[in-house]
Length: 136
Image 1: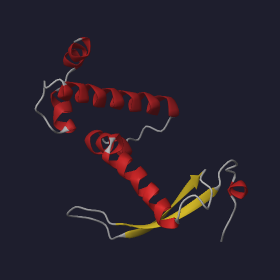
Image 2 (image 1 turned 135 degrees about the horizontal axis):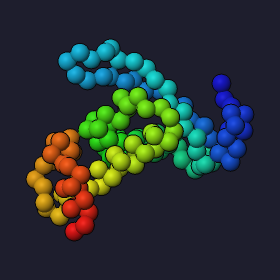
Image 3 (image 1 turned 90 degrees about the vertical axis):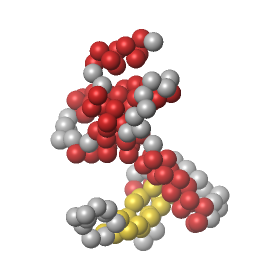
Image 4 (image 1 turned 120 degrees about the vertical axis):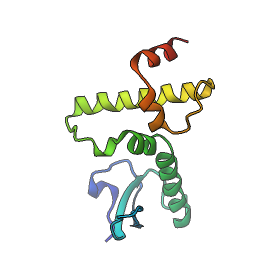
């Protein structure tokens, strides 16, 4: 069923996209595949991009997020498993995770660590080491 963005409360958008995808969990005890539908709002007009081009925009968006900080914050720091649900504490934890990720990247860029995994680096990091890294 086609709806306008205004009908779903997204004034200013020109399109609402529904993308069906199959999710296949990995690992030894992986669950069976599941079908998910993701909804996206776009300010692009219907004539600006073809359906395959819109799909590529969605794929590129998720590739950047999943291969960027979200993947590392979730896998290395267990962000998605966090049970903190109140907005203030959740924002503080997100900021601390981003700070740790930034310090790690700074440490790598300066050639001061050979550790290629954020999780392993975090296990060895202490507050005094982190402060020392930030002051140089």
